[in-house]
Amino acid sequence: MKLMTTVQTVERLRQIFGERVQINEPLARHTTARVGGSAELFLSVTSAEQLMTAAEIAYNAGVPYFVLGGGSNILVADAGISGLVIMNRARKVSFRHSGAGVVCTVESGMNLSSLARQCISRGLGGLEWAGGIPGTIGGAVVGNAGAHGSDIDGQFLAATVWEPGFGVRVYNREDMKYGYRDSVLKRDAALGKARRVILSAELRLKPEPVDVLTARAEGFNAYRKERQPGGASTGSMFKNPENFYAGYLIDTAGLKGFRVGGASISEKHANFFINEGEATAEDIRSLIAEAWNSVREQFGIEMSLEVELVGDWSFE
Image (cartoon, rainbow, N blue to C red; front, side, top):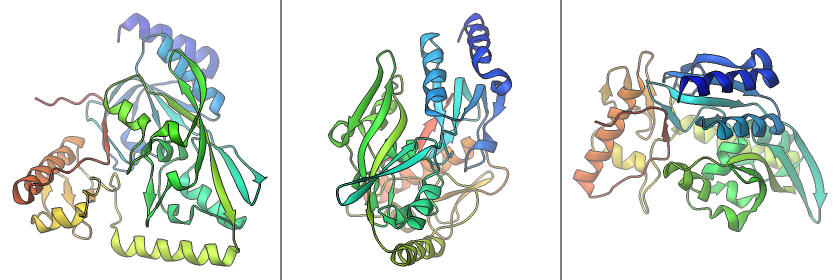
């Protein structure tokens, strides 16, 4: 990014957002793995309109942009992220009755777990599986987040999306082309295309007794606590290959407890890579390479990352 472009972009953003625009903001404090370098430019927004405005300014200036939600399911490079990182705190939510169900319209910065609890308290079922998931609705919609046999695709009706260079468009389920932990938006990001930005989503929910929903959610949470480790991690590192569990493959390859620098593969669940306190992003990436190569060599299975590597990585 050219210096003049950076200066002009900062000036334009500060005309609108004031001192919320930060320079060289450390990203480790904003991610669940607690690793990664700094954002060249950093801005926190609190509405879908602000989110779109910030992305448009960056795109029109030729400045790379990245929307950061809950900071899970990503691994930020030690060199940080060039351009603008937009911290999405747009959390407006509303409910309306539609036929036998209820439609929840929610801005993309809302925490998924918080939304699940809010729906349960209203006697609205469909998101009980999401309790304890640290990501946002935007990230969940892009990655088709899921757990316990359910996922966003099961409740998804539509999303309002800003398309770089084209403006706002509504996507339905068919437009999203959902797959296992995948969507057309996630595939585009992997190809290096300018990112489309989720502004809000509509989810269909079903009225059920609060005590039934609460019991279901508590069962899921108990299962999660029993099976998954605490500590700083990105969440599940690899997608489960067809007919296998990634954690089982990594465990069977003999890698539980394997360490590189300040990072280790969890003894509790081998698909979780833990920052023990002083890990670098490169330490974790080295664990990823070790796990991928070991599983490929021992079982002939090539695992795919669920986590996205973002920022200025060097793969020499």
